[in-house]
Length: 293
Image 1 (cartoon, rainbow, N blue to C red):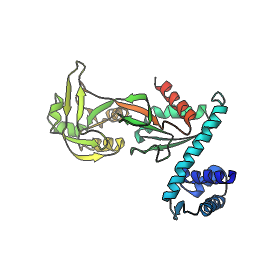
Image 2: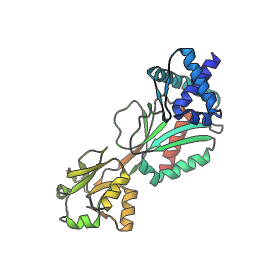
Image 3: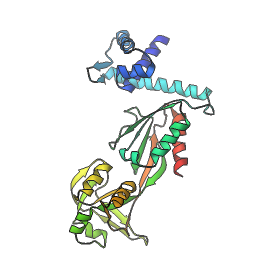
Image 4: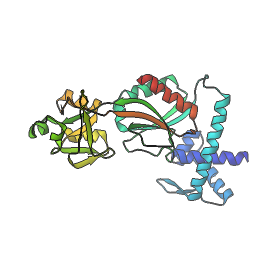
């Protein structure tokens, strides 16, 4: 049984790392040994667990079921080790984190770097993409999300917020009638962020609220793309503060209706309710919250 459990753990590592070679590097074993273990496990079980090609691996239905069970098994083992090895000792282990690509240009990177320096025995695996990942399906321990969270079975903690500015290039702004109210922007061309609501809500300091829809023939899934298209004069858009300030400093963008503000983007950490690395996850989140407060 011990050998079988070890083989299952190696199989789960192959799935988590995405290839035999990556799993071999992670475990410190030869790739041929990893392949041999998985092949023997398939032979013992009488099923195919992985479809292999020269470029990628994919799970069979049986492989998916075993991998789910393996995650539970490894999670229980890690929880047991955590229970007898308090976090007062130097934390060690691995965390796989996903975050929006625009985060790489914010102060959160300083927080990530300080955590990495403070806990050198924690292996951090960051994936930056503006395309949201499925935390559980994609095997992440933690996800950083920007925006407003939907109801979810995941645990969530707000760690900060990012202000947004409505911007356009000086050329585009000059080509349109000067606006005095958000309703004047209905005829402007908007560059939309694909994962946000079509309408934009704006408020003033004295509590006035306005919603504007505007017309749009351009939609993107990246905050950086919003910036690049706006500086090229393709329309009006709402972008995070750090990108807007870059455009203002370079003279590439102007702030449209600066007396009106937009709802900030909340920055949240989310993770599974029963995380396989719960202590490390909460330690990481707590450090982010303390840095941002």
